[in-house]
Amino acid sequence: MSYAIIRNANYKVKNLSGLYRHNERKNTNYSNNEIKKENFANNYSFKMPTSTYEKEFISLKEKYNLKGQIKQVSNVVCEFIITSDKHFFEDIGQEETRRYFKTAYDFVANYKSLGEKYILSAKVHMDETTPHMHMVFIPVVHTKDENGNKIDKIACSEFWKEKHSYRHLQDNFYSYITKAGFNLQRGNSKDNIHIPIETLKDITEYNNIKFEMEKTPIKDLVTSDMQLIVAQNKKLVKYCNTLRGYYIKSIRAIEKYGQLQQENTDLKHENTNLKDKNHKLSNYIYKVFEIIINVFQIPKGKIIKEIKNHMI
Image (cartoon, rainbow, N blue to C red; front, side, top):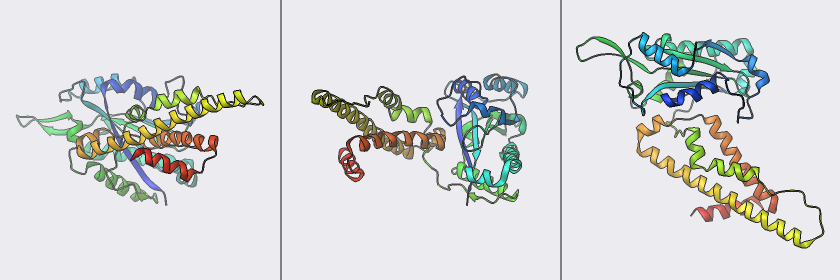
């Protein structure tokens, strides 16, 4: 059975421009190969921003006199990514898919008494392999000031201050979506380690791996000249060793990062990511691993053993 999936990520003011351009499809080019420009027309919104996310944020802050101290390091916007799996959407069809996302939109508008007015954007992407919705909102808490007056305050840390905030989010979303008639299982109940995609790229040396892949020396070599063959083989050995080095560093970096996040719950909650993008990057690294196997025709078990020995 498919799962009801809702994930959260928190963003600072400096991140809003990139988030806006991606979600609202304002970029000219996309590194994500799953995004098909010819399918942009199939995307739709339940709430469309009248300007950029940053301008919308400033406008709503002033319009509703939102309190809260905003610093450069402050998280001022949250984004829910709501989805299930490809087969679920294929089975229920377009009309029910739209109802699924509209139901999810209503859930978010009422979650923790947020209020629809604090939602900046709700964009459904139908231009990728699996339909999903990006819901961007200001984490507003309804509280009182020191004089006892009711106020609305931008406070991401307070919005998620419960001990198991994300677990409760999963519980409530699952309950809401299944009551609406969608036959789904609850999402993962564990507080998973989340790594923002840009952070993951940094710690896994993604750009270095990409550079090595783009300048790959692997070419068809049709010759009987042994000197050329030996020279090409040396290039391949050096190339594969470089990639293997990046791969080993990536595994170590991810493990270390995970340990740090386990030691700091607040950091874990602020450093959330998109599981699908992490999965894609993992596949990318795996392909590098496959190149090593295919080039040298070495059994996979032997390569894995060698990598494990290097990691000890």
